[in-house]
Length: 391
Image (cartoon, rainbow, N blue to C red):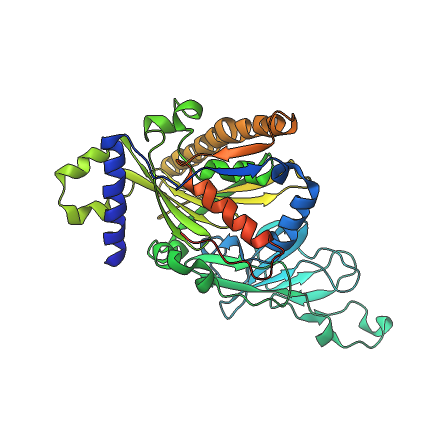
């Protein structure tokens, strides 16, 4: 399979970095103005041009696999309702009754074919159509066909459900994934067991996201956790448009030398790990004990974000004891990120606000961060002739 040959090439690169004490390198440094993390005007522009107009991964197929499953959530200030119809299709709507703008479904997950507004009792099918008006005779004649829920662009690919928060825009999830599609599709995520999600507040969303894109901080920030598994400042990158796959070698990657070269691409979690990153808000890490998907969103103010940490496994644990151990491991990984990443991020936020510096400088050993910020600049550009970054 070509994908495993590609993984094998990345594994060989990571092994070389460990043996030679090197890492992937960008051509030069990149300076990013501190104002891009602090300026409310930049924050509003990011929400408008990126989070309101690009496909966002808002749910996993495994979260809502059955007909009539649904998920309701607030996303960057907009109430969103994602449903799965009897036809198996995932749809998304603004979670707003067309009578008096009441939210239809409470935030969370469930299974139902119809939603009844708790304010005046209007009823909608899970395809968004208005099917009932309380006391219709008293209300007066009305064309229900014109008062369905406002539909949002929604598409499903590789076990992930993408939504654009602006009605009417085109969406093609597979095209958006580009070169990442085969990688994610090969995981068969639609068949995994979805366990739970937990919110994690933090600093500006870019401060949080920067931490997912490099391993330079492993030794200093994760000396007793991540660094016991993976050496600091050793990584390999593959870029697919704005998305990326990051390879982090484990200390035991040298075991690959004892295997046939054609087997190197099949050793994820057994010599190296991959972090799969989708612009602008998705980071996916698979460990033997669990898989963790982070979804990042700007918070209510420029100095905050809300991250949803999701946990799943290829198969559901078969015993109560195994389930309890899995749940405990999920909470352990959550605590590590909260204490050792997001806790530091809040201090970075304070440091940026102190006025101590005008720019952040990303080193040549931080190519993932450089790639991310160049794509941010592209999507925020006012130049109609701006070209997407290369590399």
